[in-house]
Length: 89
Image (tube, rainbow, N blue to C red):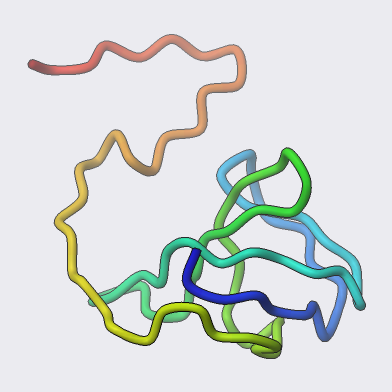
């Protein structure tokens, strides 16, 4: 857990990879994307987890300030609602 944030506006993502929320909800942030998508963070609200725009939230509390960069794969960003996908080994 990196930080706890407060939603400053309603947000509805384009697909299942994104976290939907309404203004005033608290979100736990676990990932801050880097590189081409620095505008996105990932976190959870209750049992839901997904990506959201960082400009839609305000930081309330920081738990970890040291950043660690981890490489990602294409499969880290899949939305599999009723669609099959073959993962390469």
